[in-house]
Image (tube, rainbow, N blue to C red; front, side, top):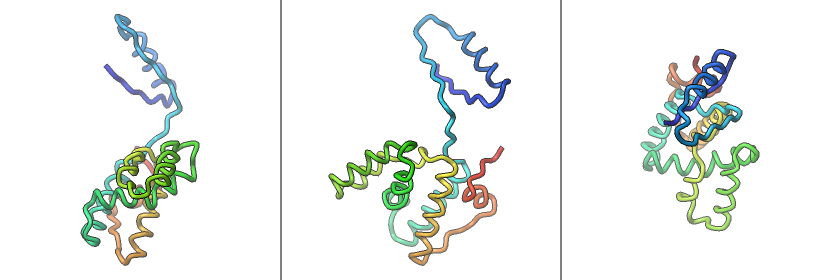
Length: 155
């Protein structure tokens, strides 16, 4: 059984303590505690894939091709600005320098799920700027856009 808990306050800390106290010790267990690093929000993800659909339709590429291309072109440089947070980006950059024609495969080393809410908002701004530079206007659905590009999480 695997359980992941985010401890935000005393009540959630006590819940984690109760969970560990009630765990069976019939076999060895792994317990790890680390600082919580929230990843992109659901709104950010939904807006991103909506934008990938638009870009794909306008450019003749598939959504997955656009995703891979923009990860390499826009997300990797963003991640490299924060090497202490995104060590996989350094590995991807090193691989790209050695094997530049393998970028679609190398882009699999990094993922949008690795980005924090703040960094994903920055990435969305880069995607929108890229689209504008090639003459594509991306939609701004009211239910997603403000929270997604300003990096706010819904409660």
